[in-house]
Length: 112
Image (cartoon, rainbow, N blue to C red; front, top):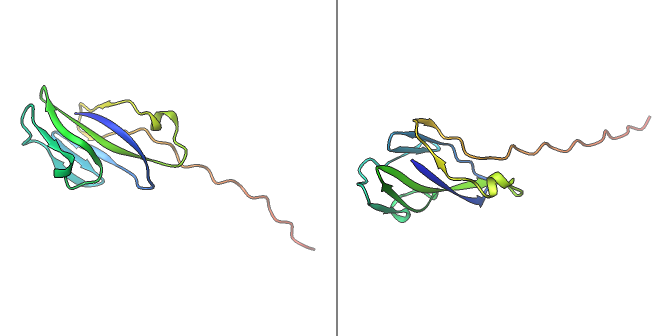
């Protein structure tokens, strides 16, 4: 499976995993096992906002583009992600930025 990522500013999270030709996004299963070699399935035919463009099978491998959610100031790795080749089943690691640490507020002085 070959994933291209399309960064987009949004507060949602994406948790993908793979099981053969099944892509699981936030617990929802998308089975592409019936997609024949050379075929293209438009994103409009997939009932999910996570897909961008079409899903195709090239040389036996699924190729697809997913939205990559990010916060207001993404790192370079998140804003310009490299494509990911997924060759094993299980969770798929996506580039992400850890949540920002809350700024500490100075203790207010208490009157005596």
